[in-house]
Image 1: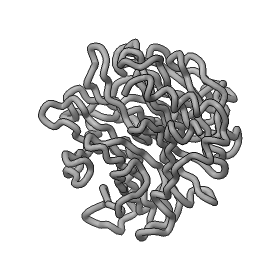
Image 2: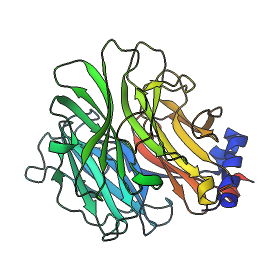
Image 3: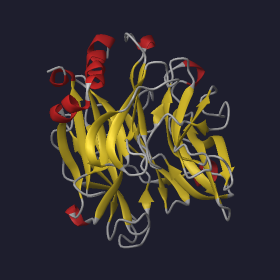
Image 4: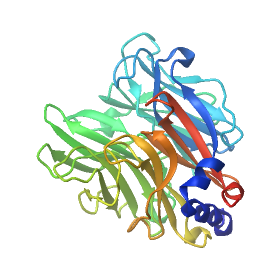
Length: 375
């Protein structure tokens, strides 16, 4: 996608919150109470190689809590989010579907460089936040392989809590690590009050998975990096943007970089006080890059815009590879929590987010097309 197509869309987004809200195409993807699930949470979205949007979520059967009988579910859209398919269960505790087992934290990624399986969709996820699994689809999410436990290499033995993502994962495209799959993840130490961020990665198109960079903090640390997402910078580094889980620093966000493809962090996560958002997962996405023929480099961040409440979804933009960010722009007023961004044809920017008239009552998809935003 070239710069002249992408950048008018972004320029329009920066003008005002009002045109965005009125011009947005919106659809409810998951509605609490539908299809036998009490609540849907933890959205993640990718665009498959055939152009379909794949929207993942946790289907929580009997309540809205983080633990219990929770499945991973999927809906697809062939029209850039205007309409959505019937729900598909991607992961359940197949031997005992009513078991109180939590299958969650979806972190999908499309492998675009696997010569044997072009467009394979990988889905890392966790079971009871104690083990990490992967499954894949070679038909754009229609069917899925048997899940595979990669905990022996994908987590450290002293970790107690483990979560992949949530939100889309990343495939590197630049430099010596091109093709590597990167899953920004988080963990805690078993038996210790602690928080940490880490990288789950694969260098062989998902055949094997291992732990890369790790940053673990004790309870008395200034920041506690937690749920995080990754984006590749044009210089080949990776930018990590994390939830700060109630450290002594007042910032609710933290950031780090990796110059070796996610093997290590260049430095520990540091506070990112410029982001006004509650303690919650946020999402990031690259929209444009000069080394791909675009007119400028452009990153988008998305998260609730209130300091102390999960409400009022906003976006910010960076034209200097995350060094600085624009002022927030409101895109959805009212309850809003977790989100995931996706780039659409048209061009357009899409976001799948927790919202609705009451907190966590819906998972909603919105998209903003350039021609509508310019009206």
